[in-house]
Amino acid sequence: MRERRVGIQELEANLNGCLDEVQNGTTLLLTNEGRRVARLIPEPSAGEEKEGPAIAWSGRPLKKRTPKARLRRGASMTDIIRENRR
Image 1: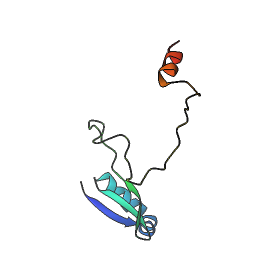
Image 2: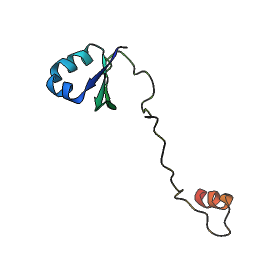
Image 3: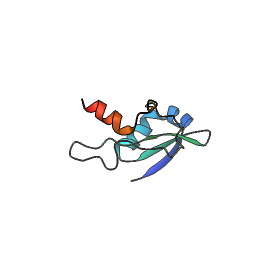
Image 4: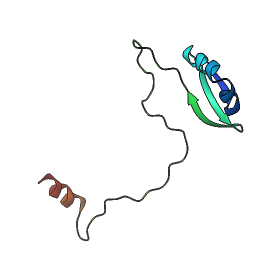
C-alpha cells in the first residue's frame, strides 16, 4: 500500500487530485504544521474484506479513569454477582 504525506494547504488547493490518488489506492497522511492529524484511506471494493481491526488505536496514552462501580461497605464481589443474577 502506498502512502504519501500531504499538508492541509496542499489538500485544500488540490482536493480533487488528492481524492483521485486515494481512489487509486494511495493512503494520504494529512499533516498540519508537520504534525500528523488524519489519514485518508481507500474504501475497500465490494468484493474485498477490510484488513485489520475495525477500531484503530492512535498509540496515545489513555487517561486514567476511576472505576464507576464501587463495592458497598461489607459487600464482596461475590455478593454483587449473586444480586445481579436475581
